[in-house]
Image (cartoon, rainbow, N blue to C red; front, side):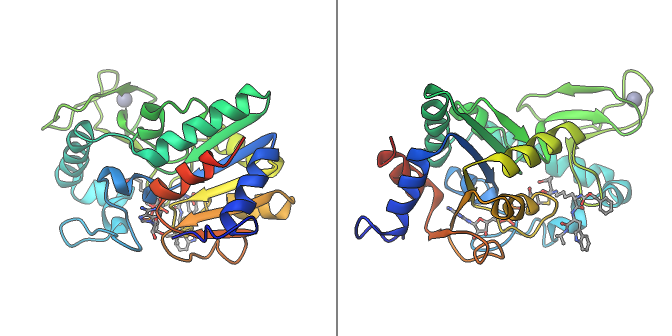
Length: 254
Ligand code: BJW
Ligand code: ZN
């Protein structure tokens, strides 16, 4: 749990930095959704699906090899997502955005998560670095559409070109959406405070956002259950659960 002992604790320093900040950027990962019941990929509480690592499934090669199995995996996850809710960590980030926007600043939330829980908690300026489980797109042409939480048993064919549809997420070896990445990189480079929350900080280019923020002089704060490669880069590393630490951070922030 975070050291809450006094005015010089990590939490107090983070609260002070956030109170004074005008431009705040945040990177989130699977750990922020853990308290909602979404399994993480790695680290404490990390999950394997059917005994396989995420790298085995989440790639264009994995989909080409076993399309039905990978499609079903995403369909099951989408259905599960319909039964869960954002947690206090998501709510706290939405509250930070309201406060910063209320005093004329900017808050940019770059998330690696594909679960749309930040938007459901009320966050507005969300950049989905790795896409969304609630969208599917054609493997060949530009066609894409939103989907809900109902199961889709069969892989649909693209209504425009007939090719196979796929989840509109970013798999290993694929580029992030260019406009989304550019906006996230700019926010990281220009912010006064950068928060990295619940990410193992091993998947690039997203993990590079912490390095960008650290290099340009903003105060960098990590919130994670355990140390990560980002821990040695940041000014303040708070060990604890995102759904507990973030509300505490907000409660002491103007
Ligand atoms: C809590 C908590 C609580 C728990 N409170 N904390 C070397 C070799 C091979 C490849 C590469 C390489 N170097 C770089 C690459 C490229 C690769 C990469 O980074 N690989 C590394 C694994 C080595 N990156 C890519 O391929 C990316 N594209 C790219 O680089 O394009 C350029 C390029 C193109 C062609 C060739 C080469 C380069 C794309 C990456 C796409 C990642 N996609 C996934 C799957 C999404 C779809 C799906 O979910 O199905 O995105 S992988 C998976 O990892 C998912 C996540 O967004 C991502 C990051 O994970 P995250 O969010 O950090 O979660 P975890 O589980 O790792 O960590 C959770 C953390 O929370 C832990 O630290 C816990 O302790 C903590 N925690 N509970 C607070 N309650
Ligand atoms: Zn198509």
